[in-house]
Amino acid sequence: MIKVNSLAELPRELQPTVVTIGKFDGIHLGHQRLIAETISIAEQQMLTPALITFDRHPSETLQASQVPPALIGPGQKAQLLDESGIELMLAEPFDEAFSHLSAREFVQRYLVDGLQAKAVIVGEGFRFGSGGLGDVGLLRELGAELGFIVLEIPGLEFEGRMVSTSWIRELLLAGDVTKAARLLGRNHTTVGEVEHGLKIGREIGFPTANMARDSEGLLPRDAVYAGWLYADGERYMSALSVGMNETFEAVPRLLEAHIIDQRGLDLYGKVITCEYVEFIRPAAKFSGVEDLVAEINRDLDKIRALLG
Image (cartoon, rainbow, N blue to C red):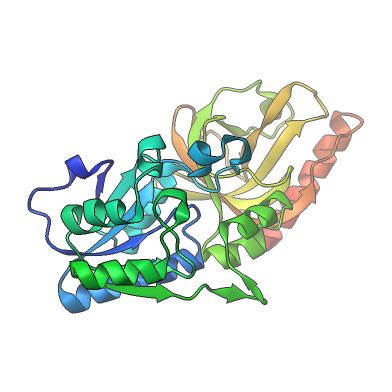
């Protein structure tokens, strides 16, 4: 996949495209439906499947006090889109200048002159242009005038509710990683570098890989989860602990991963992926090390039964 951050970076030899547009801030099942339709039409018409998204959540520019925590990071988004079959991704900086483009200016500059779009695929209720004044009806009118067709794809419902990034965020912050995975079409992950910690886990017999605070992928509710850790092309059964270590009152909120029944792995400085599979128990404070160790052993038995 070719990834560019401005129209100026578009390949000179770019062929006409089918374009889908959106925040794509979760790449959940609803987003995947848009992407699949884009790729399908591109294959039928021998066009390039392309996607316009943004380098930040629009609220960072429009309503800075109401920016929701990111579900996935830019690296995760790019990887998921690459794996989806999208061939060109334009991650436009959503700054003040971009936010003031009129609907017609956006269409002319990005869809017609920039990406040479022959078809544009958008989600239900799509809005664009300064103040969100452009809607699907206007997009169709501009398409008829400027030479592209428009398809509006209905939202995807699950259990009577529309699949959305905000709903998935709610589920993760409640610890329901299993239901979140059903809406994502995959298990939620956190990706980042392993950094040195206080080595408390090692001292009590359960060494952990501590993920850096700038890792990508929303940390779910403070709890212990059954999951997988991926490093150097290998997958390891793991206990994933999110939160503060309240027993020792020394570790700030982070993700710590204990690889089960493995010893001697050196992951410091490596980028790893932690995949959440199932909630085990909420975070808790223990009266002492013996109680903590006993609880950890119970956690590991549960995880072995689930994943082993």
